[in-house]
Image (cartoon, rainbow, N blue to C red; front, side, top):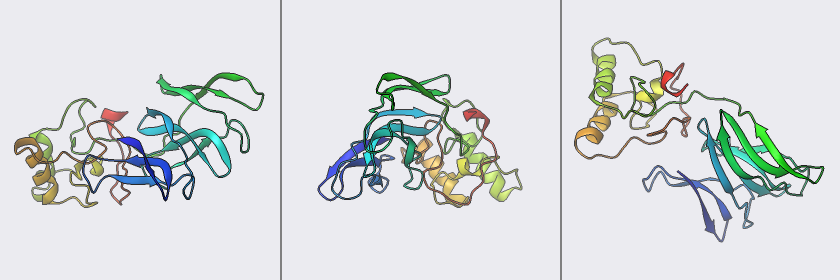
Amino acid sequence: MFFTVYSPLRGLELWRSDGSPEGTVLVKDIYEGPDDSNPREFAMVRGILYFSARDAGHGAELWRSDGTAASTVLAADLKSGPESSYPAGLVELNGLLCFAAEGDAGRRELWALRPEITATLFIRGNVIARQAGEPPGIGDAIHILRHLFAGGAAPACLKSADADDSGVIDLADAIALLRYLFLAGAPPRGPFPRCGPDPTPDGLPCASYPACE
Protein backbone atom coordinates (compact mmCIF):
# COMPACT_ATOMS: atom_id res chain seq x y z
CA MET A 1 0.00 0.00 0.00
CA PHE A 2 1.29 3.44 -0.96
CA PHE A 3 0.13 6.71 0.59
CA THR A 4 1.36 10.19 1.51
CA VAL A 5 2.44 11.48 4.92
CA TYR A 6 3.32 15.01 5.98
CA SER A 7 6.10 15.76 8.47
CA PRO A 8 7.72 19.13 9.31
CA LEU A 9 11.17 17.77 8.40
CA ARG A 10 10.28 16.21 5.03
CA GLY A 11 7.03 17.79 3.91
CA LEU A 12 4.41 15.71 2.09
CA GLU A 13 6.15 12.58 0.75
CA LEU A 14 5.54 9.02 -0.46
CA TRP A 15 5.28 6.21 2.10
CA ARG A 16 4.44 2.50 1.88
CA SER A 17 3.15 -0.10 4.32
CA ASP A 18 2.64 -3.86 4.45
CA GLY A 19 0.17 -3.43 7.33
CA SER A 20 2.71 -3.80 10.15
CA PRO A 21 4.34 -1.00 12.20
CA GLU A 22 7.85 -2.07 11.17
CA GLY A 23 6.79 -2.32 7.53
CA THR A 24 5.44 1.25 7.40
CA VAL A 25 8.26 3.41 6.06
CA LEU A 26 9.15 6.44 3.98
CA VAL A 27 9.83 5.39 0.39
CA LYS A 28 11.88 8.46 -0.52
CA ASP A 29 12.19 12.15 0.33
CA ILE A 30 11.66 13.13 -3.31
CA TYR A 31 11.84 16.90 -2.69
CA GLU A 32 14.65 16.83 -0.14
CA GLY A 33 14.10 18.83 3.02
CA PRO A 34 10.84 20.33 4.31
CA ASP A 35 9.35 21.08 0.88
CA ASP A 36 6.48 18.92 -0.42
CA SER A 37 6.94 16.63 -3.40
CA ASN A 38 3.12 16.27 -3.23
CA PRO A 39 2.74 12.72 -4.66
CA ARG A 40 -0.71 12.18 -6.17
CA GLU A 41 -2.61 10.57 -9.09
CA PHE A 42 -1.47 7.01 -8.24
CA ALA A 43 -1.73 4.12 -10.71
CA MET A 44 -0.21 0.63 -10.50
CA VAL A 45 1.00 -1.01 -13.74
CA ARG A 46 2.61 -4.48 -13.56
CA GLY A 47 3.67 -3.95 -9.96
CA ILE A 48 5.18 -0.51 -10.54
CA LEU A 49 3.58 2.59 -9.01
CA TYR A 50 3.27 5.63 -11.27
CA PHE A 51 2.34 9.02 -9.86
CA SER A 52 2.72 12.78 -10.16
CA ALA A 53 5.34 14.51 -7.98
CA ARG A 54 7.85 17.37 -8.02
CA ASP A 55 11.42 17.80 -6.85
CA ALA A 56 13.96 20.62 -6.67
CA GLY A 57 14.68 20.57 -10.40
CA HIS A 58 11.28 19.70 -11.88
CA GLY A 59 7.67 20.72 -11.57
CA ALA A 60 4.86 18.21 -11.17
CA GLU A 61 5.92 15.39 -13.51
CA LEU A 62 5.50 11.62 -13.93
CA TRP A 63 7.42 9.45 -11.42
CA ARG A 64 7.67 5.70 -10.85
CA SER A 65 8.56 3.46 -7.90
CA ASP A 66 8.65 -0.21 -6.93
CA GLY A 67 8.69 0.72 -3.24
CA THR A 68 12.44 1.22 -2.80
CA ALA A 69 14.25 4.55 -2.64
CA ALA A 70 16.68 3.58 -5.42
CA SER A 71 13.84 2.79 -7.84
CA THR A 72 11.83 5.92 -7.10
CA VAL A 73 12.79 8.08 -10.06
CA LEU A 74 11.47 10.57 -12.59
CA ALA A 75 9.78 8.56 -15.36
CA ALA A 76 9.20 11.40 -17.83
CA ASP A 77 9.90 15.15 -17.81
CA LEU A 78 7.08 16.09 -20.20
CA LYS A 79 7.39 19.83 -19.66
CA SER A 80 11.11 20.50 -19.49
CA GLY A 81 12.73 22.19 -16.53
CA PRO A 82 10.95 23.59 -13.48
CA GLU A 83 7.53 23.95 -15.16
CA SER A 84 4.83 21.33 -14.55
CA SER A 85 3.08 18.98 -16.97
CA TYR A 86 0.57 18.01 -14.22
CA PRO A 87 -0.03 14.33 -15.13
CA ALA A 88 -3.59 13.35 -14.18
CA GLY A 89 -6.13 10.59 -14.72
CA LEU A 90 -3.47 7.85 -14.69
CA VAL A 91 -4.94 4.49 -15.69
CA GLU A 92 -3.64 1.12 -16.95
CA LEU A 93 -5.00 0.01 -20.32
CA ASN A 94 -3.77 -3.20 -21.97
CA GLY A 95 -0.37 -2.91 -20.31
CA LEU A 96 0.02 0.79 -21.14
CA LEU A 97 -0.04 3.68 -18.68
CA CYS A 98 -2.44 6.29 -20.11
CA PHE A 99 -2.87 9.80 -18.73
CA ALA A 100 -3.43 13.45 -19.59
CA ALA A 101 -0.58 15.96 -19.33
CA GLU A 102 0.71 19.22 -20.78
CA GLY A 103 3.85 19.04 -22.93
CA ASP A 104 6.33 21.69 -24.05
CA ALA A 105 3.87 22.80 -26.74
CA GLY A 106 1.55 24.03 -24.00
CA ARG A 107 -1.42 21.84 -24.91
CA ARG A 108 -3.05 19.31 -22.61
CA GLU A 109 -3.11 15.99 -24.47
CA LEU A 110 -3.47 12.24 -24.01
CA TRP A 111 -0.19 10.37 -23.40
CA ALA A 112 0.68 6.67 -23.24
CA LEU A 113 3.74 5.05 -21.71
CA ARG A 114 4.80 1.42 -22.09
CA PRO A 115 6.37 0.54 -18.72
CA GLU A 116 9.78 -1.10 -18.64
CA ILE A 117 9.72 -4.47 -16.87
CA THR A 118 12.85 -4.54 -14.74
CA ALA A 119 12.01 -7.30 -12.27
CA THR A 120 10.03 -10.55 -12.23
CA LEU A 121 6.69 -10.06 -10.50
CA PHE A 122 5.54 -12.64 -7.95
CA ILE A 123 3.28 -13.23 -4.93
CA ARG A 124 4.99 -13.97 -1.63
CA GLY A 125 3.79 -17.26 -0.12
CA ASN A 126 2.15 -18.48 -3.33
CA VAL A 127 5.00 -20.88 -4.13
CA ILE A 128 3.25 -23.18 -6.58
CA ALA A 129 2.43 -20.18 -8.79
CA ARG A 130 -1.21 -20.84 -9.55
CA GLN A 131 -3.45 -18.10 -10.89
CA ALA A 132 -2.57 -14.66 -9.56
CA GLY A 133 -5.86 -14.26 -7.68
CA GLU A 134 -5.70 -17.63 -5.89
CA PRO A 135 -4.58 -17.48 -2.23
CA PRO A 136 -1.74 -19.63 -0.87
CA GLY A 137 -2.59 -23.00 0.66
CA ILE A 138 -1.07 -25.87 2.61
CA GLY A 139 0.51 -27.17 -0.62
CA ASP A 140 2.78 -24.13 -0.68
CA ALA A 141 4.10 -24.87 2.82
CA ILE A 142 4.58 -28.55 1.88
CA HIS A 143 6.52 -27.50 -1.22
CA ILE A 144 8.91 -25.45 0.95
CA LEU A 145 9.39 -28.35 3.40
CA ARG A 146 10.04 -30.88 0.61
CA HIS A 147 12.61 -28.57 -0.92
CA LEU A 148 14.38 -28.09 2.43
CA PHE A 149 14.27 -31.62 3.85
CA ALA A 150 13.28 -34.19 1.20
CA GLY A 151 15.32 -33.21 -1.85
CA GLY A 152 12.36 -31.63 -3.60
CA ALA A 153 12.85 -29.23 -6.49
CA ALA A 154 13.41 -25.60 -5.67
CA PRO A 155 10.66 -23.20 -6.74
CA ALA A 156 11.40 -21.39 -10.00
CA CYS A 157 10.92 -18.18 -8.00
CA LEU A 158 12.65 -18.62 -4.64
CA LYS A 159 11.43 -15.17 -3.60
CA SER A 160 7.88 -16.56 -3.46
CA ALA A 161 9.00 -19.13 -0.86
CA ASP A 162 10.51 -16.44 1.40
CA ALA A 163 7.26 -16.13 3.34
CA ASP A 164 8.80 -14.17 6.23
CA ASP A 165 10.84 -11.90 3.91
CA SER A 166 14.11 -12.69 5.67
CA GLY A 167 16.10 -13.15 2.45
CA VAL A 168 16.73 -16.84 3.32
CA ILE A 169 14.61 -19.94 2.62
CA ASP A 170 14.37 -21.96 5.84
CA LEU A 171 11.94 -23.71 8.18
CA ALA A 172 10.69 -20.34 9.45
CA ASP A 173 9.10 -19.67 6.04
CA ALA A 174 6.94 -22.81 6.18
CA ILE A 175 6.02 -22.06 9.80
CA ALA A 176 5.06 -18.47 8.96
CA LEU A 177 2.84 -19.65 6.12
CA LEU A 178 1.15 -22.33 8.25
CA ARG A 179 0.51 -19.80 11.03
CA TYR A 180 -1.14 -17.49 8.53
CA LEU A 181 -3.29 -20.29 7.10
CA PHE A 182 -4.42 -21.97 10.32
CA LEU A 183 -3.64 -19.80 13.37
CA ALA A 184 -4.68 -16.30 12.21
CA GLY A 185 -1.03 -15.31 11.93
CA ALA A 186 0.25 -12.29 10.05
CA PRO A 187 -0.05 -12.47 6.26
CA PRO A 188 3.11 -12.57 4.14
CA ARG A 189 4.67 -9.20 3.47
CA GLY A 190 4.33 -7.65 0.03
CA PRO A 191 4.04 -8.43 -2.71
CA PHE A 192 0.86 -10.04 -1.35
CA PRO A 193 -1.91 -10.80 -2.21
CA ARG A 194 -1.32 -9.28 -5.68
CA CYS A 195 1.61 -9.57 -8.08
CA GLY A 196 4.48 -7.16 -7.61
CA PRO A 197 8.26 -6.78 -7.45
CA ASP A 198 10.24 -7.47 -4.28
CA PRO A 199 10.31 -4.25 -2.19
CA THR A 200 13.19 -5.60 -0.08
CA PRO A 201 16.16 -6.50 -2.33
CA ASP A 202 17.95 -9.76 -1.52
CA GLY A 203 19.99 -12.42 -3.29
CA LEU A 204 17.11 -14.84 -3.94
CA PRO A 205 16.54 -15.54 -7.65
CA CYS A 206 13.17 -15.41 -9.39
CA ALA A 207 13.71 -16.82 -12.86
CA SER A 208 10.03 -17.08 -13.73
CA TYR A 209 6.59 -16.80 -12.15
CA PRO A 210 3.90 -17.71 -14.71
CA ALA A 211 0.96 -16.62 -12.56
CA CYS A 212 2.06 -12.98 -12.87
CA GLU A 213 3.03 -13.02 -16.53
